[in-house]
Image (cartoon, rainbow, N blue to C red; front, side, top):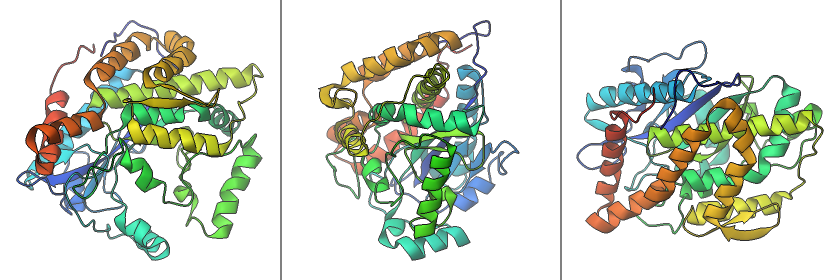
Length: 383
């Protein structure tokens, strides 16, 4: 990944939350030690900006929360330090950190001891009990809630492409699901998840959230799992469509594209360009195709309601955000990272290649641990 101290920087900050599995170093099986490991890290308490390492819905998980950054190089260094910190703590319990969207190895997840999580289990039953999946959530700063809703309305056509780029969950309970991102399928069981209709304004967004809460489809505003939403804690738009990425540089790529989408959408809003009124059912179809095949087949170009080669649609996304990336100085970084990902394959491709070579789901999990650790410790050219 390229970057330098004397290039222009965006005034719009970006931060990343990564959910990861904690797996045994002998058998690759997720272990219910999230509370222990999270409190044993150097960043055992979240900072005022939400940064740090925390437990998650299931005890087999931990969450890494970066600080908000203007420069991608600083975001990368932050995420790398968090992964290193969590890996050191996990090693003290004989565990490794596996950044995979779903567990390749058979597991019965256990809920974290938390009153809210218990209420979720009570209301949502098997959906909550089976929910062991790991995403990458990107927070991009907005200047107002009005701008934030305008952004939400305008980024909708491109969210499925982020899913395809980040696809990293082909296996479930030691079975190849046929999907590149089965996490997306698991997550779609929640009643508030998935693409949203146009909100038009802040009142429309708030009404949608209030309706979900009034009907009992969610416990609270934190359970509004739209593919992109206004954060309930920070002045940000939160993108929620990506699998956790196998390597930090991939997460930074998703963050850079997300910020490019926000910058582009905000500029369109200020210029009076209306949001494209794509039907939610077409957006769901695009999300399904992205989850099904990642970058290995066709993706849906929702602007024309047609299927096109994945690389063509990825190229269209890059063209869409190119002016924003040029203004922020991120274009070279994004182009280099995209070229590497397209040449190497998605996380799902890497996992399937490991299974083909070893015939072992355990090795798939352990290779994810090794790959993340190797890339975290590697200097990748950022300055």
